Amino acid sequence: MLKFVKHHMDSIAGIEIYPVISLIIFFSFFMLLGLWVFTYKKEKINELSNIPFNENN
Image 1 (cartoon, one colour):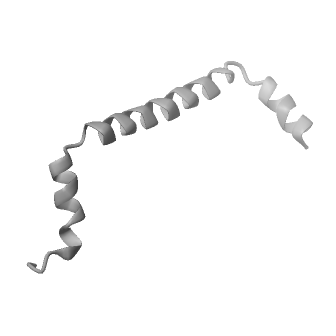
Image 2: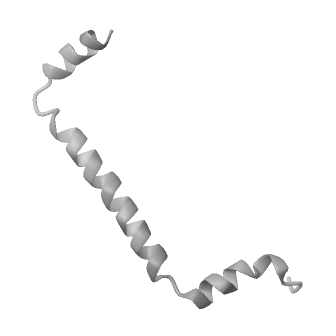
């Protein structure tokens, strides 16, 4: 089964770039997400974490 799929994938011109592009997108997404998490303000995190405990609607 895998040999059948691999043979058809080899016959498509330019297909070798798609795994590289998907790796770059995946890596950049998680790097940007990590950067956002580490630069988020502590005051805002504390404010958001106390929302369930506030009795005001």
